[in-house]
Image 1 (cartoon, rainbow, N blue to C red):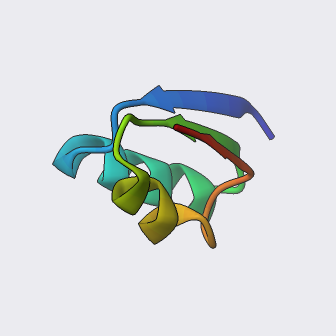
Image 2 (image 1 turned 120 degrees about the horizontal axis):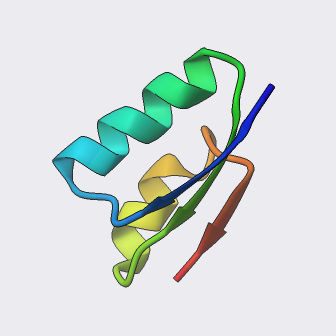
Length: 49
């Protein structure tokens, strides 16, 4: 298992975060928009606004 940090949860970042989680990685996300963070909270390990 690897730890991945994704900064910016646009179309690409959202897809990347979801796929990396499916592959068994620990995923942390950072974005300035709380809505985008909340959409991915069930899928990721940590999230920061």
